[in-house]
Length: 131
Image (cartoon, rainbow, N blue to C red; front, side, top):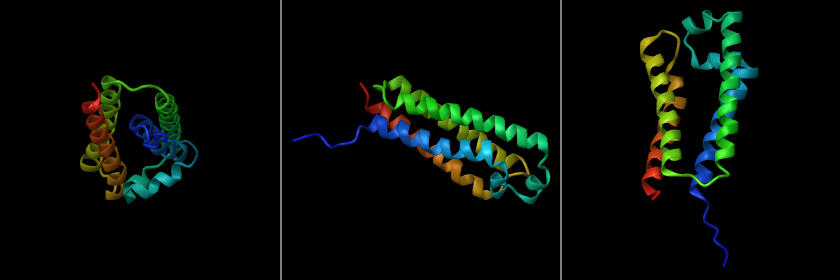
């Protein structure tokens, strides 16, 4: 009988790539959609320069998605899982810091923050299982 159990490494990295791909596409091509995560102060602060920054950030996010998708096809080591978990933890830290220290982000921005925290926890758990 064929092993039908999904490869946890492939699932983890593909899920992370898909999650960030969605945000990368939005920030690159539809930066106005990010307004739903912002307070009125944040929306009122939008300029053509901030749209340019969103586009740049979106392309950065898309590049990470491509890298994660490539990694999902490879055998993952403990260090690779830890590195991905740290990346997710850094994004979580940036999002939480932004929510609580600036007037620009509403609580809906917690959704990607909590999602990234989940990716961090998941990655550390997977790294603990690799010998």
